[in-house]
Length: 165
Image (cartoon, rainbow, N blue to C red; front, side, top):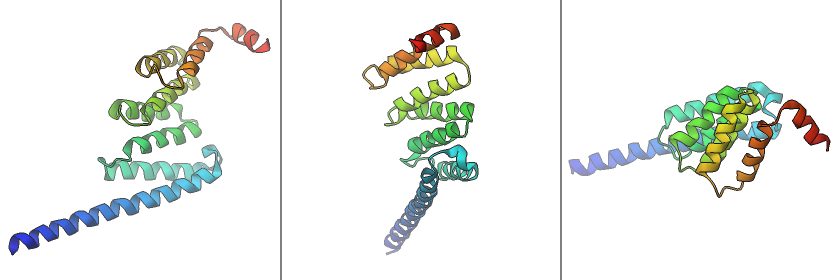
């Protein structure tokens, strides 16, 4: 009898924890939805920062949640929208290194390279694009990555000439 009661108690506790996680995720998604209505994170920095805090709190509270790679990726996108390219690159880096099999891992690596471009770290951007091409040779963005590498190799004068023609 005692074993049955303990088993039921544990089941209730686990269910309560799961319900809390679902409720927290629902709140997070509602806040995120508000930000998506704005379309540009920089246009509403306060809301964007609230979303980032909510992402971080959820990630800390539920480190084993299946949504973590996607939330880290979204965090990188919001940071990029705010112009915080270095922090954004770090978020994208976490996605593709800690969750290499996640659906968003390839795009995270691609976006990380773009962040390095925005930071004028052209060699690092080039190396990151090359890493993307090597890891994901069949990804639809490979041709874009190759194009970006070509552009990164051009001088300012060559770049201006290329786009004038």
